[in-house]
Length: 449
Image 1 (cartoon, rainbow, N blue to C red):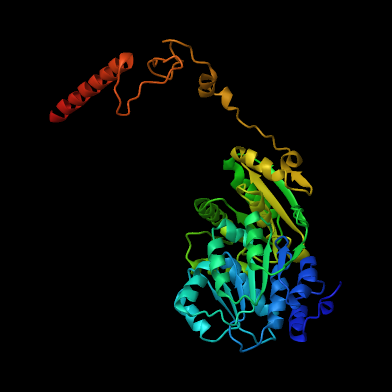
Image 2 (image 1 turned 90 degrees about the horizontal axis):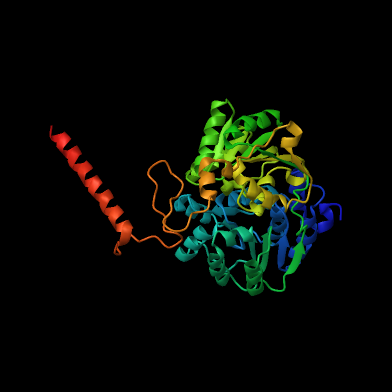
């Protein structure tokens, strides 16, 4: 199949798809859209940036009746992703005159209630806020005919599975349900067995985590040298840049340092208010900022076609997090670059991720002639002392800078945690206590004078 016309999409949606510049459907779109248009359930597995929003959005928009109440429900794990999905639906459904509402935590519920009073046909929601609306009756499920679970594996990781089951129990059984995920752990498959009706499994490159279209490389350096190399890579890049950090504090520090270097920077991290996060994303999407520094909260909620470079300032703790990070570049078939800065303490984590990368991976240390000098802890004095065997009997341990401590020859030490003290250890403890007491008396006497 070569064009969207062959997918039997109606004229209103096809018109907006063409205006967005899409002519050839992605594999997940080509295979899943006809199935959903026929009213069959779908389990879709495809990597980020492969057009999943249009895959479930087009059939939903085409099969929904204007003015028929809330008929479509899309559940996403994060605020950013929910907002992104809503924006895409508005673009695709531009000429359908259907209304959608986004509900998520962090935004005033009064704003959402006002939007729901306008009688939308589609609701895009995060699980927690959706349940709030269901419980107070501001969202009714009687007319829902289409349910989508997007990024289902992330919802599992975030502990939302019970919330999802609660929602699915409330929507009518006679519905079209689709579930999209980058991975399919057993819990997701169990959920699909329970709530989906003979779903068609559509797996696109399910075993390929290569990051196709992305020039991937890594650089092993000392942590204190990261900022210098980061600024060099940013200056070389054409287009916008996303820098991923592992913690909120690191995100703030990197953002501040880049601002001092006169870059146009915005940041997103968990402690920011929702308004500030939305403002940062707005500036980045409108190209009013060249660099976005973010924690992994943004790894699945950014769709900015102009991102030419992703920098992993810190090595992620999971291989799938790595692929979702780098998936922010090379969107919709374009090319991109991803660089991972590996500190000496993160080499072991990086080796685990490297095993999952199927495409070519450039070692920038070799390319740039940068030598890796990883310190050997056994070469340090402390390391040597630790490595030496302890003598048996009441011998002496190696010196630790003060008087030698008595050794207990492999036996457990006498306990000082509330149990009786005996033997030489007790006498030593008494001597230390007496010296400490004399020292306190001496200090007290000095204070009097």
